[in-house]
Image (cartoon, rainbow, N blue to C red):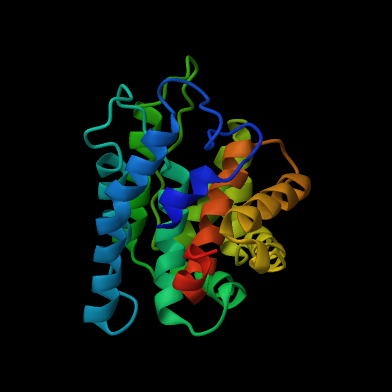
Length: 244
């Protein structure tokens, strides 16, 4: 639901309910992709339930979701929501393992990463390889394949190579995950200040704050974070949000 609703919010530099960035990233593509990935997150939730805690692995499902998200879309095979799919997988697992609000969920993400497996790390390598392989950039970045024992290990080892390749957003992203998504926490708290005005306004206000606080200009980065904020808000009181 969060991935379907996030594109509706007005966010400068992003496809929204009023603006399509280009023919391959239209509003209908983003919303259809959101519908397509729902079953993958359901599978992650099922694994948590069956395991009675964190499962032996879960990021292989995120890898499947990467391709599944664009099934039957007429967008020339361009991947959609790859950053959000990766981050959401960690946040969904955390949300099923910890009690409390969105801040508590974010703070638990580093625990999920540390308790993940080497198989998760391998799936994360494949995830990035697939993203790079399908990139339309003329100068594709050549990331190394990382030998890791967990997702925490993978993200720690990805920071310097990302910076060496000029991929600062990737380095910041890894640091954020390893430290409990502090920027998402701030955006989530900001969004909650606008609960009386509905989910769209709350998402738009969180986007404005995130854009101000992120040390680089990256609308897509903050848009992914808005998707996480939407999930955290819906998780608390889905029916209340949807009727506003």
